[in-house]
Amino acid sequence: MSLIDTFKRLENLNHHIRNKSTGSRAELATKMEISVSTLQDYINFMKEVLNAPIEYDHHRRTYFFKQDGSFDFRFQARVERIVELEFYDYLQKFLAEKNLKMRDKLGGDEA
Picture 1 (cartoon, helix red, strand yellow):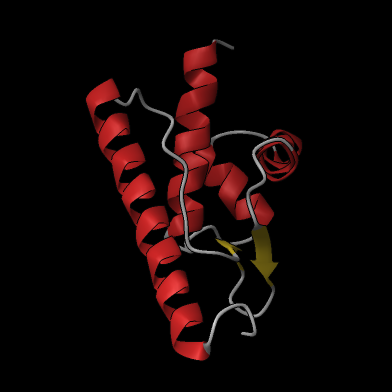
Picture 2: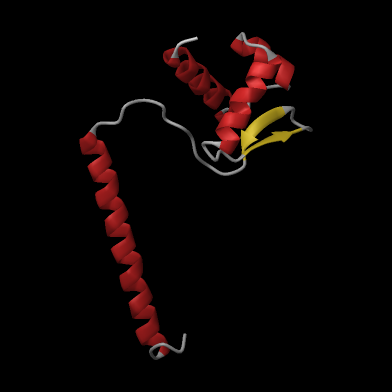
């Protein structure tokens, strides 16, 4: 199997998990046209290597991400990444300033 096929399968798995439409492990393996053991390998990879907070809801019979988020296995242009980093820097500065203002209001370091 090629690396491209692996990425496509990971994207497909991500799609089903995000939509909470996986069904049981056997049902999901059938949807993805892979074996149950291969599916489990992909889930383990996402959990252990990519730190995905994947859980299974036995009542709803679906895998889901315990925390909001997603994977994007596609190329992201440098310009987009720079904008994200600039926003992150802005957010960090904003929170630091807010924290300083709060300390001043509370009387220095005694917060």
